[in-house]
Image (cartoon, one colour):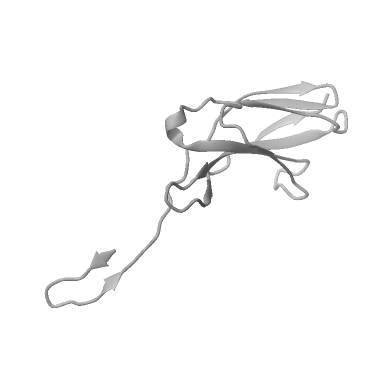
Length: 118
């Protein structure tokens, strides 16, 4: 809350959210029928409660698949059932809960990496 003083009057209230840290993809490997993606581990102080992994055959992430991981201790995900030899674009973001609001707050997406499904 900002309160104006002096010759000015009134107040304004603004709400803002501090995004959690954006994870960095540390490794991506082609696997039989898919791939495995690894990202950096976070300390518990980051309030992260999980991660989201997105992948698509389009670099613009059209027809995207999103996997939600409800474990802040995770740092890797294996994706199976993909078309062999097809190129996939992959990105990861962290998910946190606001302390006072309970709202889900997501980081920015990591840099996109690409991999061919094995």
